[in-house]
Image 1 (cartoon, rainbow over the protein chains, first blue to last red):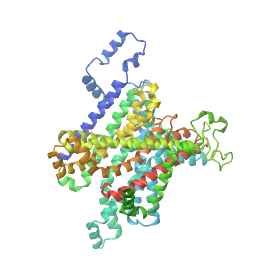
Image 2 (image 1 turned 120 degrees about the vertical axis):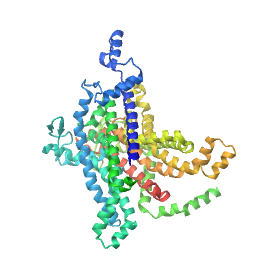
Image 3 (image 1 turned 60 degrees about the horizontal axis):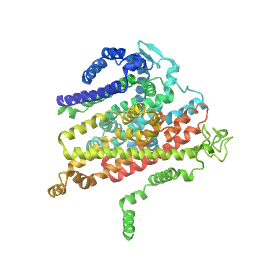
Image 4 (image 1 turned 45 degrees about the horizontal axis):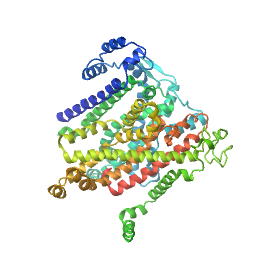
Length: 321
Length: 307
């Protein structure tokens, strides 16, 4: 178990090193901080002065080290576009994206797992078959199209929900939440569904596949032979053992939710980190891009680590080794 | 010629063909796929209009609805877009771009993945460790995120004049690089088994070079699962391209894919002109769904263990 943790930690450090190197390259080699701060008309002397002041005369390695040092305390410099500290921009956008991702994950698990269990237990039923086909549609359909369909039906035709923005938000310290106002909750509905459809389908298919395999194993037969009720056999014995891979995949999926949130945010004009990075790419705002990459890398690594720890906690076989 | 007939007959009697004949949804999906690919390939012959010839466009015809809605004409079956282009024709041309980019992207991730997988599996040692570790690191990020970043950075770094014409290759490479790991893993595992077999030892004793052993002896024995992975990857690649294009990072409006068309129509959705974006969208879903159904089936039949 200790060795398992050690391998995990080394890989975390490795990933973060690679990510920060990439982030540093974007920051340092693509953007030209001197030009950006002084403008093109500055004299050579002024440039040199600033270059020294920023530490750009040092070796790449020293610069990289300084970049990492500053990144650790959250200093990614100033956005080229609106001259604000990058970390403030990201923190301002973070709540919007996280609330979206969180709601989508909850829906994905709450809907996907029961659907997976049902389709595994009654594979031939009509409902199962339609769910199966629906899930195939779900993984074949790009998020933006789902979002556009929802907008067309609920905003353009029925005029029930607003097609863009977060609605009213409440400030809790630096965190802004849309989950405390009616308009905020209403604004959350369509983006969340849009983001969740793919994950619901994924988790359903995964649970179904695992359940089908577990049901065939001996311990399920024995449980049934012991005279346990169907409910006990399927829910406490079979489902528990099918959920292990679900934990892993859900962890990875939260990562991809952060990625797909970019698409959903673009459709619904949702003021989250996805919109921030899209604008950053459009305006070649390298500090923001570098910070976003580092932040996303850090989140993924953390999520993966948490998944491993949960895995360790729930699977006694891993602890025994 | 005779031999070809015999081979075709053998294929017709094979288990593959038998299982194909006995799964109606797959037959249906395959037919849809063939029709879509045909429409895309023959776009310039069968499309009712040429949407990229400005001379034939009439701005008076802009934003016409489909034929079955008031105001639509039978000249434009599915209506027209903002510039008066026939939607049906732009879909045919757009699908061509989508399919081409998808195939090229899968081909490039296959090439990268197979090459690295062969090297890692055959050489082993630190080369293996470095390559597979790199793969592990990359796998901790979603494919779409990697493609998004490669594409975004490339978009900025390229000289402005070259951006549009190079988009095609940039998108292909971005998706290709983002998705090599699964190919490398599969090929590496197979190579590690194959390289210990007698025929490889025999080839080595006969002084066949390492590269040649890899390409002519080991590669053919590892390629089966790779082709299944490639079919499954095609749907993902087409979707990824559509997402990049929808975000404005993929194919440019001058050379639109289905994703670009949907992006262009998205702005007009709120004013009720849904056909401009939703018909290309439907074509995209149909295409990806057909590819996924055929791919899933191929995997189940050829290599159930790949699940």
